Length: 129
Image (cartoon, rainbow, N blue to C red; front, side, top):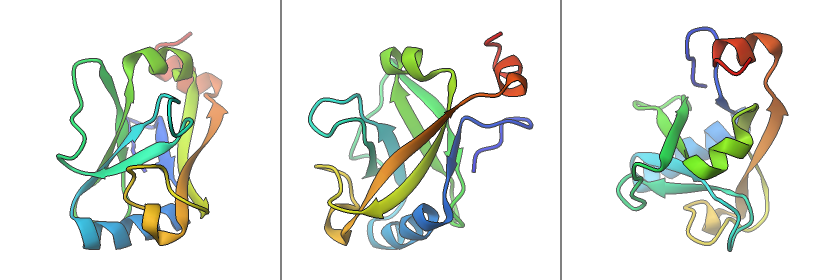
């Protein structure tokens, strides 16, 4: 879970954290990029660090702690962030086929995003009021 002061933009469920620990043991340090919706819908894509290159048009939403040595950074394109900036995202995992290039693909599980609107305190904290 990422803590930015007392508030966060991104979190992870226990089930997703467990899978992330397994995937980190297999692939090394990981990162997420929230897909913009082309080929794989709007899926959180999980990559070994260095396999997906972020650029100046990507926003670092935060880092999730999954019980590993290093947190996992979560990114989203700036244009997509404009639509999602009022939401809190939770990375979860469900049975199914993972997104095209995401490392969970062969596991029989797939990551997904659960979202909720930021509450009043979070909106104020992130300067969105």
